[in-house]
Image 1 (cartoon, one colour):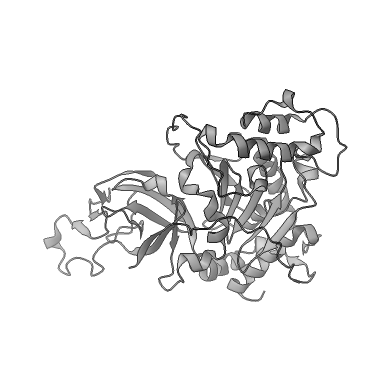
Image 2 (image 1 turned 180 degrees about the horizontal axis):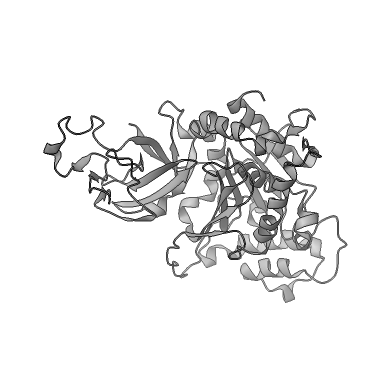
Amino acid sequence: MAVSRIKPGDFTKTPIDKTDDPDFGTMMIPKERYTSPSFMAREWERLWSKVWLWGCASEDIEETGDYIVTSIGREEIILTRQADGRARGFYNVCQHRGNRIMMGQGNATSFRCNYHHWEYRISGEFENIPDLETFPQGAPPCGGLTEVRVEEWNGFVFFNLDPEAEPLLAFLDPLDEHLGPYHFDRMVKVTDWTAEWDCNWKTSVDAFNESYHVQGIHPELLYFIEDKHIQIDTYERHNRYLIPFSTISHRVNETTEIPHLIKNAMKDAGMDPADFDGRVSEVREALQKFKRNHGPEMGLDYSDLNDEQLTDDYHYMIFPNITMNIHADDLMLFRQRPHETDPDKMYFDVQMFKLLKKDEERPRKPRNERFKHGERSMGLVIDQDAANLPGVQRGMHSEAFDGLWLGDQELRIRHFHKVLMDYIGDD
């Protein structure tokens, strides 16, 4: 089975040209896509088992024998590093009686089922079957663990359950060109959380696919971002918006006092807000110039990024379930995964990565923390979304609600559903 490790292309800058807005019509998005068990079953058959899925960061399986278990729907996959440096993936199921073999992440010289001690090499082949002579039919003809396709790109490991799927770079197109200049492989992971939320996975995707809700759910962000006048771009499968940070929304009045969130951004860059003499609306450009001039002395390489990327959120959605809040110094990656059986539940993964400054000590690798909504904070902004989404999901079951009524600011949601239905088929 072909397995490859792809590095991003050698590109100078992320494309910034606005794409033409496609005409997806104005029809309502039916609520059954979020609530129906039968639609959930179709998603498994026609979507999750066919597309490339983000599995882990490459650093999670850095050394030979490193492994991590990830899941999608009813399936669990072992992703592991081979002696030749390649990443490979296998269904996490013993060929004897179907037991799950590995849990969590770690390093192993072999994979051994704790039920009857059937053992597999990290390359997937049988290593030892205890008392094999007592099986008249011999060992299973499969030869070991069942492999899935795995490819690496830009510091991340992707897997695909479909052996006939197109190559990863073809699936990601044009995002290799867009995201290569960020060099995610230079960043280190600082946060790894998994929360169970009481909503459909698409309810969560929608929440992070538009900024129309900022005024309602995140009012404090009006003093840090422009939430309406933003660039939205759609591609064959994926989409993005470019949202200005370190500025203020058109919805609020400019003040002489720099808002605290903007002050924090200035301080993080090494810029003293007390030394700034200008209007709040002028901070963003001044901060870009400061980071461009002073980044190299702090060991931060911004040479492949344009000026706007030094402050702004280049917000990408990798279909079907990855949201990336991308900044010059860090990446906040969200993965929305469906529940095994319940369309009203999902798993929300948060992984944060950052560029290290010169002489900054590499932090200890975080272990995945799992919890349910409300058991711990994930930060103010995510907590605000998490508190709201269960109510959205409950409302979709109301007799008084038929479906989503979308405006132009929600173009990314309409585009997402267009791509989704290209896989699923007509309602």
